[in-house]
Length: 239
Image: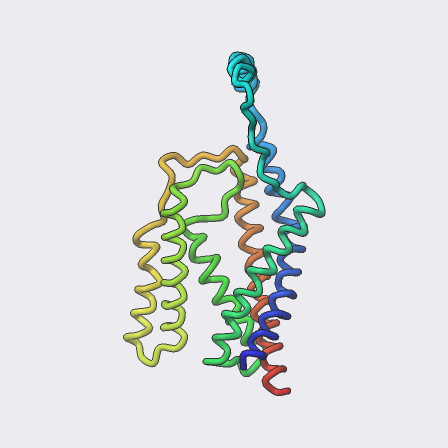
């Protein structure tokens, strides 16, 4: 059983990671790079002020003999480095989610490959769609609430969505299904943490494009992951 889970997760995660990386490279990453141009662009007045402050501070830096600055943290450059870094990150995440799906299959295995699509869409709803209802995907330069609060809300929303969907799908009576609906609604009734002022350096139209691209890309990723995991798990079980 452990070998079956590991093989299913490995191959399904690899396939889904390739799909996700290609979609991101073709659709999502260009939008991020476009948004970064607004984030790095400084108004003329800000540039002038920065230059003045740099000139004033130059004396202080020169007087501090022996003072040195740490090198900036390495980050992948645009192009193959960024693509490779994104692909490796996607592979780790995809294999982790595939392990979760394969583990769930041991409790309720799909009889048909298409049922893996249902499992995949459930994962999409749990980890992407429901959290995005309160915390939509954000471009660089977008104002956001406290990171820790957002993480707590995201985790609570994902857990509530998973529990609610499980009760709706596998609940043996209407009481459990009603409870599932209530659990689904709780995090959205509480509401996601929001910044004091909603601001973004990128145009609103670009934000909307990014949200749509992120949601569609993740939906295709989870669909591919669910289908591949179900097919591989069924094949290994029948071998």
